[in-house]
Length: 207
Length: 207
Image (cartoon, rainbow over all chains, first blue to last red; front, side):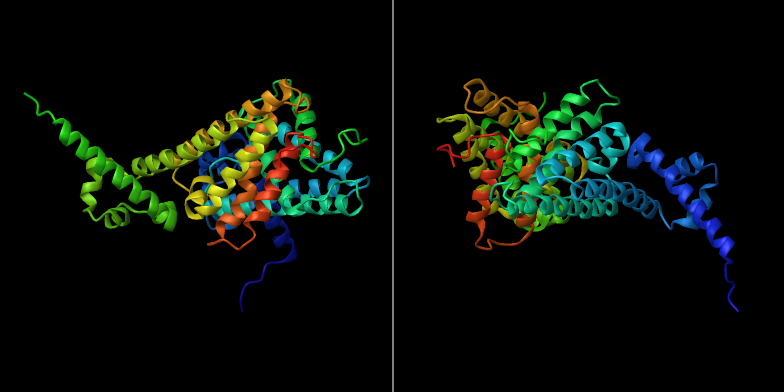
């Protein structure tokens, strides 16, 4: 008869796995994907390198889980703001601001998620998450077109442009180690650009 | 006394190198960076693989030359339009249209230049070329702000957004093998988005 784990054992394993992913995320934020070796992550978690493989078959599998969890949280936060209360342009402005502020507050991790060279498995996740951002932006732009607060436009084109454009604007500041004091201005300019891109009335109440 | 190449020999070598880069560019456009092996390129050029190494020390060096030449041409063409005659918004619209049309007419190569996974040396070139696009866009946006045809804005933010946004909008269509007949509509939507992003008067004469 096969050995079955007790519920307590399963909970313990899951907690250890969660802790490992948290540690790996902190290491990636600190040193990037390439340097975040299994040895480095195990060291940060205070366990033996071999124990990492009890939870993940490979460094790539661990990296994918780090990406999914961290990027998934950003998609979720953005989605909550974009689908929250307020007119579509106001929600777009708030969503861009929240997304950018979170990135600027955790630059190492945001750079790893958005732009840092990574193994192909992480690259594939990144592509998938960009599609999720696009879908969220397209939704709010379509709402704005429908209620007449945004002008007619191809919502998919605008959504792709917002996804690529916001990432490109943030990459350079994220590459710098720390807040250079201009975050407030950058957030304002980025939000204004996003509103223009969607054709929002610049005299509107949103920015 | 060291052997010196005659002018005729130098010209012959340069012509052979040029032809090799042309062949390699065609192979990259057809099969992408990963599959464009030295053997494949040599085969396309009708020479022995060993002869490739007379011109380039490595596959990476050849790939970098392919990238530089092809991407350099696109930067040049965009620069000519953006710095050509007409008001800044009109030049921006024309530049985006020309850039996107050229990409859609040579999808394999454009995908390789803009987005396809590539070795780190090519990735570094890509980053460098994105900065050149940004500089060109920033220049025309600053001109528009100065002559009052574009509203006040951070030209660097707009330029980064245009660079990232246009790339992201084009990536999906470039991934498809051939013209799906909607290129005209895509060009119009992309151009309209770029003008909105820079805050150009949508009632202006440019689009």
